[in-house]
Image 1 (cartoon, helix red, strand yellow):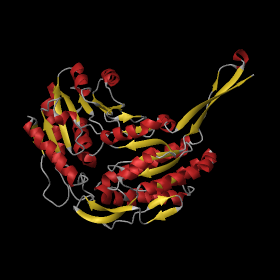
Image 2: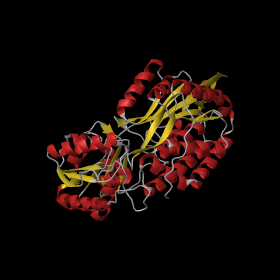
Image 3: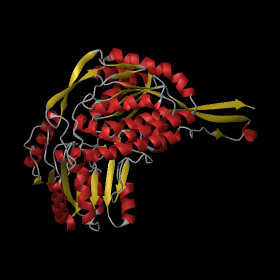
Image 4: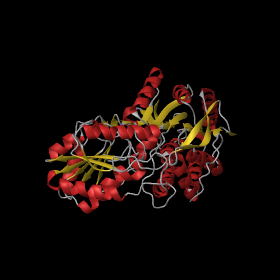
Amino acid sequence: MTDRTPPPVHLHIGDATLATGSAAAYDHVDPATGTVNAQIPMADAADVDRAAIAAHEAFDSWRRTTPQERRALLHRLADLIDANADEFGRRAALDNGTPAQAAAAGVAAAAEWTRYYAGWADKLTGEVQGDPLSEGEFAYSLAQPYGVIGIIITWNGPLISLSMKIPAAVAAGNTVVVKPSEMTPFAPELFAELVKEAGFPPGVINILPGTAEAGAQLVTHDLVKKVSFTGGPVTAAKILQACAPSMKPAVLELGGKSANIVFDDADPAAVCPHAAMMSVGLLTGQGCAFPTRLLVQESIYDQIVEGVAAVARTIVTGDPFDVDTVSGPVVNEAAADRIMGVIERAKNDGARLVCGGHRVDRPGFFIEPTVFADVDPGSELAQNEVFGPVLAITKFRTEAEAIEIANSTEYGLSGYIQTADLKRATRVAAELETGEVLINGAANLAARRPFGGIGLSGTGKEGARAGIEEFLQVKSVAMGL
């Protein structure tokens, strides 16, 4: 996989494929080289208005499309995602420097999420309430689509983010207008092409990168009936403020500072690779649900610190097109500067640097996998999301102390537990203030499980039945007998 030629990007609005938007083009920088490699057409508020109208016009016929047809279209889309796995991997490297190894897993997950919600399309039902004989009425509920859904995704995993949102929304009978990040336009472009190849009617799925003004227009547009957003809490707060006047609902999948609790009966041979790869290896630490705080019981603390550092030192950081690369660049120069600032402040705060801590001496935005030990639970490093290859390790003595430390942040997305004692695992899982808990290496982002956080990690769910219910409104109907 050596073709580094960026594909052209378009605005996909209704049945139109537009090579230019109404806003000035965006210079896309290859994070592996630090140089501009493409100009991305950008939508402004006027383009979003066109897309919202196209989605609104498509909604009435789409909601009346049989669930079986919606299911078939989504299955065709999933097959096309699988068939284009290599090209999605190439585009992931061009988009944000995701290595081929990680991109392959992401493509498989995207196809699985699409198939999962294809299966829900013909299984959405209402309920009959009460007893007509005793209550004198026949009552039932209807689960109905909202209409146009506004979707805004971030840059760290555009394909999986699209697949976590769009299939559920359209399976439920909604139409969508999607604004991907201008920093990662290439995978969304291919997704939009495959939507058309699969046979979705024009206007059902509209995809257009755009400016901040375009995002604001999407959130506030009168024809957009609900918003689904993946990103950070600062932007999410602005979205909530914009939705408030019309009481427009929103699903917010935000950041995290997830704790990985390692008890002294856990297997270090399993714990150390998992802890290192899931924090400073995979996606270069640029994932909201990653366990970036490692809490270790004191009797095995030194052993785990050294084991995790040993794994981190073996992580190959380099060209995302190299098949041996595990960790690619961070997304841009601003991110690299921000992450290095966190690292320098952590050193000054008294955390012990075990490995890494420097920029890699090559073009692009590469940072060494970095591990800190003896991290104060109240420090900046332990409290704030870094979104880069930096792991904070903290010692604890008792189960109660581990729970207290794990729950000490404003985030509440994921929690991780490593122990041979399953009674303790379930007991601690019940105490963690998070949207999900993963025990002994269970993988996150399974389509069959609800995913979403509390606190600064957001509100609402993606995945499982809860994920499609986010895109349905329940109407009660009753008739007197």
